[in-house]
Image: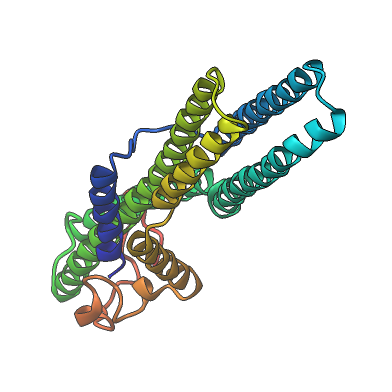
Length: 293
């Protein structure tokens, strides 16, 4: 069951990555996303400063035309009030993006490295368990050991050798799944980083042009809204999250109560559990030693 769930997670990740054009070879760290977000914030602030400067320049232009200061202030008050509202809307959009990135960080910033460590542990376990098979096979084929006890022990050894092989495969499958989840998280980081970079470039580009009062900030707000949608699409995948959570739950259950090692849970050994070979007190080890067992 655990191996099947692990394979299902890997399949789901590959399928989603292909559909969303995610790069599973990405090595992006979450800190890179945060750095890119800082650049975005500065671009938005720069666009607003230019808008405010333009508005002030136009106000001064009317004052220089010998118009009454009171009249000018009355003329420009609606524009400045609108500018404040536009700025507030832009700030709100920027806060929502920052919150989305912070949530991603809280949930996944530490995940790739942790999963990669776990994957290495499971891969090591797979290799160790694979070594058991060699040991068991060595014991079951000792020269000079014949008779009923040797036959019984050989039959039991074959069962346990098969079980060890299967368990090694389970551990390897889990290692692959954990590694795939780590790669997926890094791919999400890369996707967010690239989306933020595109939005930053767009805002900087629009800031070089003119337009109506606070037009740069208006355009920036629209760009931020688009960016928020892109981040949401990149970070929200309920089906994949459910598969990953199920795998993690099964891994935790195996750690807390190792079902794989119970009589009925041992991959191939359930039918032979309790069938003990007779007279094996002096069975040598696989290395040829004669220590009693």
